[in-house]
Image 1 (cartoon, helix red, strand yellow):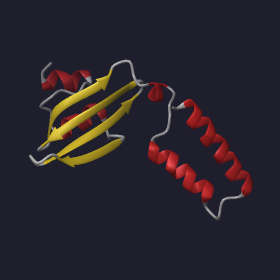
Image 2: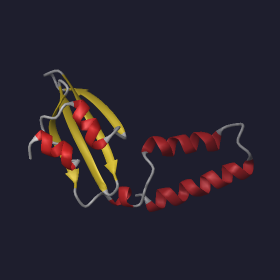
Image 3: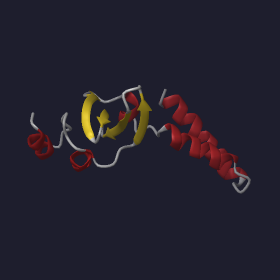
Image 4: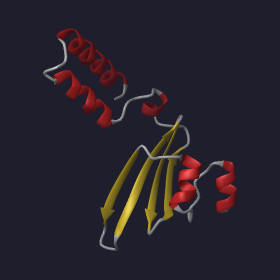
Length: 117
């Protein structure tokens, strides 16, 4: 599939610019940077419905696309990201959080941990 067809169809394609990728998938859920000696590379994680994409970019262009066509079990169950879980934990441990709210958050965290393993 060429880039124009990918943009029209809503699918990422190797060679796309970051602007084109944003048109297709919107904002990423996470962005990672790494340097493997050949210069910095960027990895972007996108969760879209039941699909998960990991896009690797070099010098502003898509160079690698990995995806789970069936979707991950976590994505299918609408599991929160690690940062969202940490934010809930932080809220639960906050001095300004009432005991009732703390119990409610901790109960929800337990449920999510069990369901999203």
